[in-house]
Length: 393
Image (cartoon, rainbow, N blue to C red; front, top):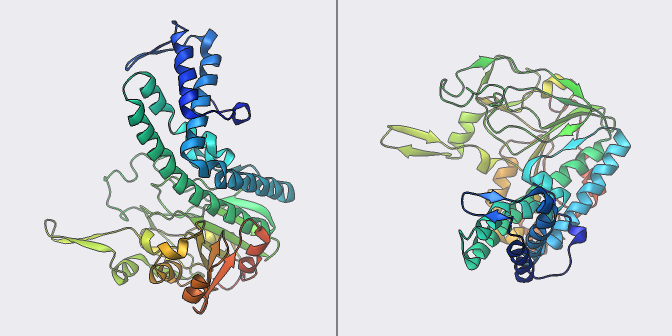
């Protein structure tokens, strides 16, 4: 798939851009786009995609204006912070793949990629124009909401990493469903397989990537911090592990996953199975957790099937200006405090903190509000609480 060249796009409506695309196809009989056939000869391919991409740009710009405003600002800020971090530390590349990676590079291109196939279906007369507009609009707007949220979380994570002044980075090569296709396929009950937790490997860059089906939950980011003289790890997008660790660090604090699920009622009763079916922990976990230790291998395990590491700090990251109207205080406090973070929890906000938010959360012991916007120095208060010894009992 080609990357959309937004710099070449002009202020043109979606309907005009689509009409130009249709006209080009009608004047180029060698192009054949049908339900089961797509023929675009090489000699006209570049010109075809110029019109095709212009139609995608115009549609995203017209039907998701937030992408050209807040989305582009997030992209600029993320890329500027990424460049700054690499230049200051020498750690790179910084890897975010897939749809979110494309979105952070260029929100209009990232969203436009999601309607690539839909536009071909429209050209093949498999949809009416109104049907396409409804489907494509739903696709890009729902994706924008999710990717803007995830993108701002990645900006906050990079901001914290930058404030930590890292000089080394590590990864823990846990087995996942790519390297062992039997993981998660039912040949073993979850937790039945017992194995060793992988040790740390020093690497040059930083990667947020982690397969959702994985043996052990290991940190997405692990590094040595010159600022705190500690090894620090970050984890986000929590999943549940498939395996049980043969050994866990006795120096660290652990929480029993089954006990957490029981405490917060994360199950439903299945009379047909005569048992409870447990839900995942996601509803009671933070957006981002930070861990610290004096030994990098004490950070190897975030969670196995039975136990979860107690963090130093839990974060909820709020990109929306009206987050306090959408989230119940008791639900948010539960997400932040369930794992009993040793140094407390933070709500990091992109927009100014409202008086109602201060009323709801300002007096909660161990919970602080930060208006970060796109100022990574505002995250210094989080980093200042990290100690190399506080999480090692």
